Image 1 (tube, rainbow, N blue to C red):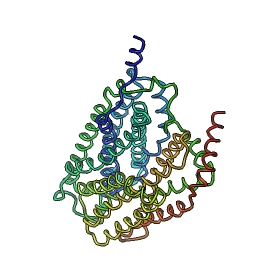
Image 2 (image 1 turned 120 degrees about the vertical axis):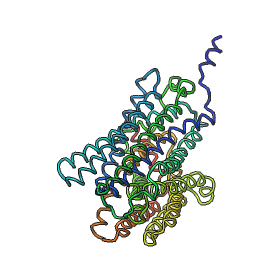
Image 3 (image 1 turned 90 degrees about the vertical axis):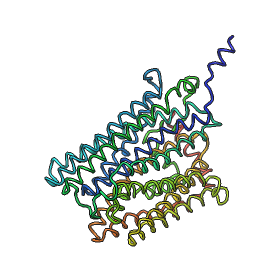
Image 4 (image 1 turned 180 degrees about the vertical axis):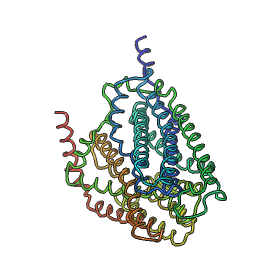
Length: 482
């Protein structure tokens, strides 16, 4: 009888269908990223004529609060809600970020109206601060949902199936970006009804166009967040109770959300090789994501694209990235190795960015779409090569801490990239009267950043890293425990 009880207490092993079901949550996060970095940024920069630096700065607030994930990870470990360590946190966080996204849109309309009617007064700057605060709350809600979800993935998996689960779930993120772009483009104004001028000019000069845009954007930010919340509930309902091994494990798994910012900095500077490698990773991340806040406005101002058309640009980038991530591991890495794969990806990213600039001079939307497909493919190759190399360069006992340090640094780097993209665009507008040159400056800086990342990558010595960096990281971890 005792053995029977013991057997029944062992949680079921997660199956492939359940892995894809869990991936629906990550797909929802991909859809949400389209709303903030694919729709709202474009509306604010082009239709509302708000300076790109302010737009990028407010949106990036949700990335700057990334260190809060440490607290949410620890909270879900220690305290249950409704008898669950993870599920209730995921649901509450999803409800909050869905509400926050709608509030952000309403404040955006108030900000646009204030800029148009009063200019840059105290009230206008107060609305900018309020919008930044809402995006910070959006980021906190995102962390309160996504961090316990990441912990749930560890809880419900074992060493032999965890990599498959994580691979499926993160691929679904890119699927969400593609689906979000397609659905958003269908719900937004058609090209025949959108603002025709290519110049960034406040749509408040066109009351009829403003009403049409507000109705479609408000509808989009009600429907899609509601769908994403539904996906969050459906993807995790009953999973923790049936599959979680959390309470049966004697020690908590070494998860990446356990590391503090101070610990991350120590790990990143543990030795010369860790410093070189993480400088490469940071340069790579910043150079990959600088265009996030400006690509849709680029399509609007330079190509005269409607909001629905510029949102579709994310589908080309997302499809390319999905192809790159899914094929690199077995087509490129086995043939040329991890370090050369990352190098090839960085070089291809730089080339694709030059094509993005050239497409602006031709004003050919199809050329831009092709360049973004190549950019996405190159991004997938670069990311896969870099992550594979990183996992190869550290000992198993320090892998969780090392990946945690990178995850935290990457989140901050993406925030910096978002702000930098907007700032460089505003600088470009001051220097150049030509819109293509102003936007081209952003993509050129990105390409140069990728070439600089290659310079750092070429100086990473795998043998030296393995012999020195592992010991240095292990020493730091031992000191943290003393």
